[in-house]
Amino acid sequence: MTQPPKPPAVAGLLLAAGGGRRLGGLPKALLEHRGRPLVEHAVRVLREGGCSQVYVVLGAAAAEVRERAELGGCVLVENPEWKLGMGSSLRAGLDSLARAGSWDAALTSLVDQPGIGPEAVARMLAAGGADPSAYRTGLTAASYDGKRGHPVLFGADRWDGIARTATGDRGARAYLKEHAAELTLVECGDAAQPYDIDLPEDLARLDGWSPGLHLP
Image: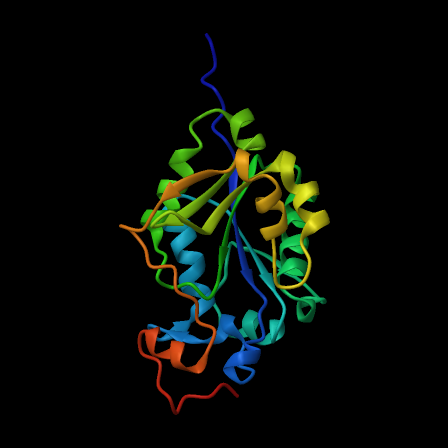
């Protein structure tokens, strides 16, 4: 009997190491959203969208995140160089995935975008089709009114190239620009809002955030 084809193995990769410098030093993973740390919400979005395994890159206040957030079942990757910017966290996450040796692609999201929910994640996963080899070479990004955003699906065959160019706070921007002709955009503007929690005024977008709330 012919065995059914093996489905693509796609891990969720959540970048959650930021120290919230422009937020007065409040680590983004620990910002309160719906009564829990924001990192929990971001993990749940990836899982509900279809990622059976989620890798979470921690940095600022990593020990406190481990203590306060419920991240059972996640692979926690600590980035000691988180102060160098998002590029270092992306490299740390992709390196951990590569060492596992079992993934065809990584669906990468940011912890500070609570307006992006499971529907956008599911749409991104569906865009890759059912062929693992296509996932391994794929390069797909969510778009909002035609503008590239997150999540981004990085095929495993591209991880080395992405890691070589991921520096500072630019993440994979240089790689995506260089390979723009190979990038597939998936419109998600009807399913998500791609705002970031970067500045103090953005905290009002968090559900239940109080201006008087400060982390210990």
